[in-house]
Image (cartoon, rainbow, N blue to C red; front, side, top):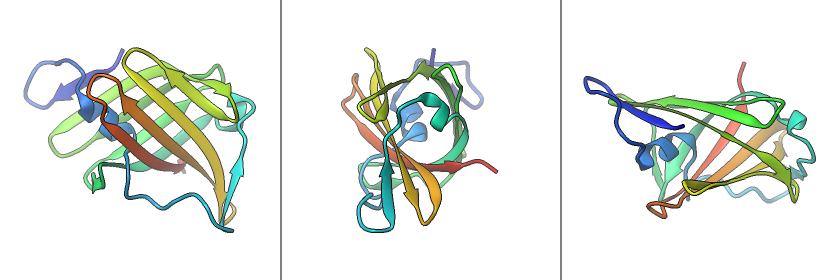
Amino acid sequence: MDQLIKRGSSRGPIVSFVLALLVGCAGLPLHDGKEWTPVPITDVHMVEGEWVGVVTKNTALLTEGSVRLMIRENGHYLFAGQSKSKAAVGAGLLEARDGRLIEDTDQRAMRISLYYHKGEPILAVEVTNHETEDRFRGDFTKAQ
């Protein structure tokens, strides 16, 4: 279950900020060209581990805070993010389908694609919040 935590207040219902911390919409580089090599995800094991990224929503870059995405070998994922005024955490279950990791629930639809860019793996994450129809996008790199 996703939770939004506002500093100085009790836990509240999830709002689109949770998704904004996870992924963003326009404004990131397109994943085409000779420097971007798409890699079909046939198994969750290909991308399991910890990833970090920056997110955008409707071209507005969320420059404060960061997001950590943890993908487990069984397809479960966890995320945590923080800005100056808010923190968010959430979880879900991904499945490999059509060369991507997919989650489609009443709350959100998420697609994760794998690319190699200049020899480094990049997860391109796209999310639509079904409640608000907000769209988000983010690029994630392996955490050090």
